[in-house]
Length: 363
Image 1: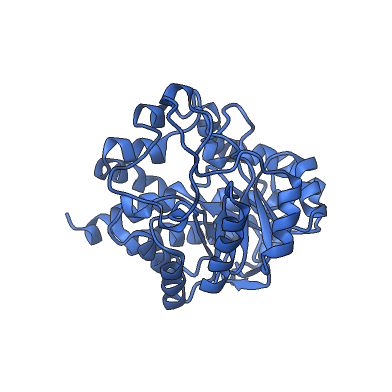
Image 2: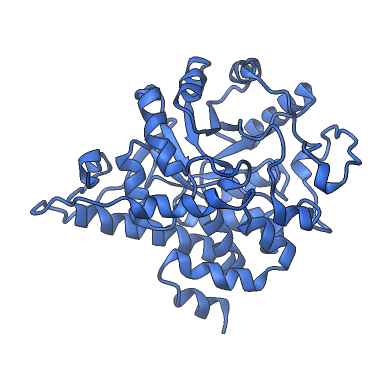
């Protein structure tokens, strides 16, 4: 069966998962599929969305459905964003360029990971060719001067904003990755961080706490510094607490991303669907709130918007699509989610995103 034949048979995002798993080596598969600890939060991320019940309105004219939105001054056709994920070359030879092409074809905003397999200048070229806007996901490095240069490189390449990951001062207890030497994939490098000063670390895997590429000492002062030097909007990625989110807004961020790092860091934290309402309440409309984690259906997207999110971010399903079908697979995953969102809006009696209000959730 060809990739085209395979894609034609997939009518829902979950259908991509098993075929993608079959195509990947065990270590790479574990890196993508795994979570922290006993993976309670990993499972909860998906089930928390499905447990929310819907309360549709009837007799509403839904002959026209509008999913258009605006995020950070960028007009978007829909609120489904490609989340930052590492090392796309490990999943498909087209690497990030294929993902960007698929995102562009699906009219989706793309977020580039610091741990990607493609240099920033090439990411910029691919995004320009695909005519898709993009953001850069940043880990603050131990060398703040290098960090500032990295942000400048991303902005020069065309990044419209910086999403600072704030929930990863150390490694999580990722048992699958430990068995595979922390998910290091032979033959793959991190070109975006190629010049980053790396602290020597000869600690055995079972005693390793810190990632040598990431700074464990970042504080609110670093966030304020980044907001001041970035020259583009800065978002924080990894907020679960409302008070942290509110303080980030006080520091000048332009958006907050509710995330538990794909359940890969600290097990038994809340699912993002559970944390989202508290963050939305604390932010109080001052900046847009985004959310990732466990989004698998268009109804999940609708529920996130009802709970106050401005957009959702999708990570693992994009990797599944990339693995199975390259750019076309990424495009199909995103278009399935958009189509299901449109169907849900029609059946809920909500023809515009603004109509997806909290009263459409069954209390």
